[in-house]
Structures are given as structure tokens and as C-alpha cells.
Image (cartoon, rainbow, N blue to C red; front, top):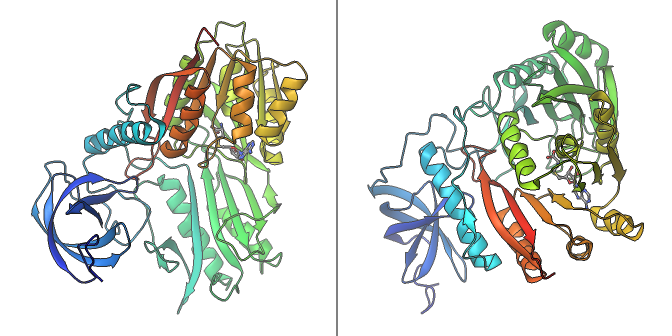
Length: 460
Ligand code: SAH
């Protein structure tokens, strides 16, 4: 229904000019100030759009024809780009993507964080931005003819069978195809999330770029996995570099991939990889950055911003398997890491030993509870590094950071919106945002990672 404030209605055909790009890669055009979001349209382009959905304050449309193309538009190399929701920006040149991510960070920090003045550097990108992922997590379903493994069609839960992915390491593609074939041979059924029936929910593979080690995780609905022994034997025979085959059981009706229980079917509980000179043991459920090349760029930037001389006490909140902590420990006096997933902390401790690093201590728990407790025990930090999940830092943690008075805070963020919110809090409580470095961890997707340096103002 078109009203005075809503100038479009469903099925309208309109000509529109695109001015901007959202965080998930949709072009934004305006009709009398009313925003219309259109997938795969770029700023500077004009086109004809059919309105598909109208909300109170915005609408969605489908691009029918482009009447003016952006000079940054390229042909998306992946044949399934339009069906798959995995990448959003393949139609934008890589240089255009890096510029867009820098602008997006700058805009969000200004709009949500009130940080108009802060320097946002050009995004650090990859020389070769393809085949970068070290982890594949592929939903398994069934079609007539048996098991399929692929991707969810954009904005749906319909699985489309797929053989390769342009941002996935070739080895992971190969493993997924192989496991699919082997499972199919043994008549193992795929899972149906509508009926909550079936056996195999996901195949997850992890590949150590530096070591060549492989992990295969079979995520099943129940404990039952028919022909388990044969399955393992065939995987081992056909993948000589596999080091770990595990089963994870997820009985819940959820789109979270992993369940609580993991059992080793064969081999080790972990695989290993290196970032820089540091070796990491990684288990199935532990967080480990998916782009190992850019991870080194990211961590080196975090290390640079930490400005360590060897005398500092550092806290690494949200430390995962201790990746950043161990990077920092090389240059700090002492590092404390905290993380909520127990397996990750057990990996972190293993990793410290593996690398002969003795000046780190790890604790399991919520950062917003453990760090105030450390503070109450008299622990003070000169530098605090935070690397929270997408929802950002809990306010209790931000309060503790303020009262601990570190010289510097290094904020590593995968979500500019919550980053902006948290920086707003810290700048209102005696810290100054010095510089922001976007790093492209996820080329061709809308995601952007940032490292931010904050300093405590002298008067505080
Ligand atoms: N710094 C690590 C991990 C970053 S991802 C790396 O670069 O590899 C964020 C991590 O925060 C995840 O490992 C997640 O398990 C953990 N996490 C989530 N909520 C948390 C909380 N409230 N307290 C501590 N850790 C948390």
C-alpha cells in the first residue's frame, strides 16, 4: 500500500540510481528519500527495479536491467554466485571491495560511534583473494538419488548440491566430495531440518595451510552412525594426510552446526597449523581464523598497536586457542588469556607448551566475569586486547577495562556496528580512538575485520 511516506508498492517497476552499498552487499537507491535495497547493484549505477517487498521504512527490489554500469563492476567468476548466499561482492572489483569496506567502517564509526575524526586506513587486502578458506562446513541433505552436500540457496534452507567453492582451499573441496561419495556408498542418510530426521547433518573439514594436516568432522543428529568403521577406513585410505576424524553429535533442532559432544573416531583430537613462527593445535569446536594468510596480517597489526617493550602485563579477552596471546607473549612480560569454550582453553594451554612459551596463563570463563575477578585479585594490565564475537563486548567488561586503566586497548572486531558502540563507550570514559585498520579476512563477502588502537588520555 503506497502512502505519503511510502512512495512504492509491491510489483512497482521503477528506475532508480544506486548511491550506496550495505554491509551485506546490497545496493541502496532512494525514491523520494525512501531506501530501496537491491542485491547485486553497485553505487553509481542506475537500473530498472521491480519492488518485491515493502516495509514501513524501506523496501526490497529485484534488479531487472542495468541502464548504467559502474566502472568497478566485474563478471562474477563463480557460476553459482547468484544462487549461493556465501559471497555478496563478487560482482565488484577486488579494489572496489577494499575501498567499499574502508568506507563502510568509516561510515558506521561516524554514525553509531560518533567518531567522525578517527583515521580509518585503507583496507589491507590479499594479493590473491581466492581459495583462502581453511575450513569448510557443508550442510548435508538428501535428494532423490541420495545424499547431497552443498550450500543453502540465498535466504532459504534449501540445500543445493555443489562440487567446488571459489573461496575454499582446493583440499577442502576435495575432502567434501570424497566424504559425500563414501557416505553415499554406505547408504548414510542426510539430515532434513524440516522434519528433524536423518543422520548426517554437516561435514566440516579443516586444513592446516602450513602443515598439510586435515581434520574431518562428521556432525550427526544422534550417536548412531551406520558403517562407522568402513567409513573411517575409506576416508583414511583415500586421504593420506588426514590426521583426525571425529564425530560431533548435535541432537538439537537448531541451525548451530556443532553439538556439545565430540568423539574421536580415528587419529588425534587436533590438527596443527602455524601462524608466523607459532604452532597451533586446533580441535573441532575451537575457533580458529578461517583465512590464515590474512590472520598473520591481522595479528601483526594487533601486536604493533599493543606497542610492547617486554615489560608489559597484557590481557587477551576472548582468546580462543590463545592465538593472539601467544603472539603477544613473545614481546610482553606476562599475558593472561580468557575464553568461554573449555576445549579452546585446553588447546591454548597445549599451544603454550608446544611453543615453549611460559609467560602466559589461561582461564576458562566469561571475559566479563573473569577479568573483574582478576582485577579484584590485584592484577593490572598495561594493554588489554579484546577480540569478541559479533555481538561485541559486554558492558561489564568495558566498565572493568575503564577501571583497570590500561595505557592502551587494542580492539579486534569482526562487526563494525558493535565495534562503534563499544568505542563510543570507551571514548566517553577516558580513551581516545587513535587509528583503525580494516583487514580483509573474507574477500568477496560483505564481512570486514578491524583492528583499532585506543589510548588512555593522560588526565584519566
Ligand atoms: N582471539 C581469538 C578468538 C576470537 S573469536 C582468535 O583470533 O583466534 C571470539 C572468541 O570469543 C571465541 O573463541 C568465543 O568462543 C569466545 N567467547 C564468546 N563469548 C565469550 C565471553 N563472554 N567470554 C569469553 N570468551 C567468549
